[in-house]
Length: 236
Ligand SMILES: *Cc1c(COP(=O)(O)O)cnc(C)c1O
Image (cartoon, rainbow, N blue to C red):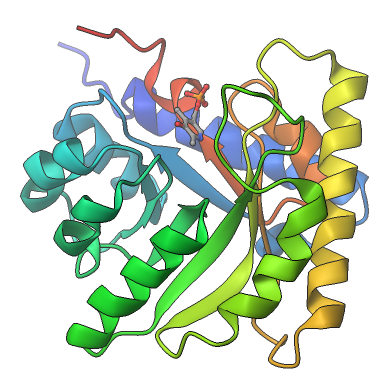
């Protein structure tokens, strides 16, 4: 009987790391600047742990309920970032479980994270979510307002602004997406220039299964990949 040495997930993780490395090198970047996030929505914990075992040390959760249900089953060597719409009344359930909230899309949410983190004496790393394509259906700050918001975040002692996150427009052509990614990189530079405490501002979370190589070539430091690691999502 032949033994299967690597699972499909492990193979996908390896392949994705290779592609990130190639794309980084082709654009003159150091591959070690880029982290691969395994996006876990709808995926069973066993599969997620296979990805961790294969070297993926960062998970992305986009639903509070799902995070709470699956959290205990995860191999604790991986970090978890929250990446989805977050209602203020649910912040309290996750502040002790995640190391970063990437999807801060309102000042009200920032205030609630500040309040909950002050209670547990934690400084939370955050990213501001940018609605870079100005889509009505999407949350996030507009490109025009995000620099001003970043300055306000400096007043919150339990929040540490680390950078920006975006979800590209679904169905966009590659050249359109490239322009969004470029715009994100420029916004990060603008925000760094405006903030006195700017040494931590170095994260650009952008690119998913369909476009993470492009995102790497345009400056992403976190790429968020779900289906590319775990196969097509089946919603139940
Ligand atoms: C689902 C999701 C992803 C990953 O999408 P894939 O197409 O599965 O790679 C990335 N970011 C966010 C915020 C998501 O919700």
